[in-house]
Amino acid sequence: MKPVYTIAILDKNLSCPNCQWEGKGRELIQEKFSHEESIELSCPKCNYYFGFINTGTQEDSSS
Image (cartoon, rainbow, N blue to C red; front, side, top):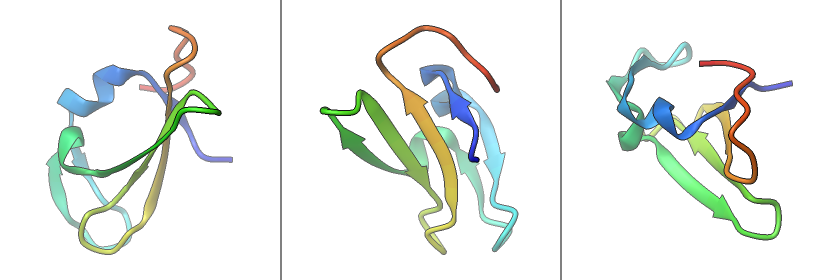
């Protein structure tokens, strides 16, 4: 199961474990699913799936 993040991940420096892309979380591909209250995050270079932001709650299981 992939990690669940808070919106704070968008301000963090990240590195893709698949292709070594590096950048801010806000540079990730963000696909919003309003019916699920979540935003899926993927690498902009290789489309590696990082996990998702749960926009329906403020709880954070990973940072």
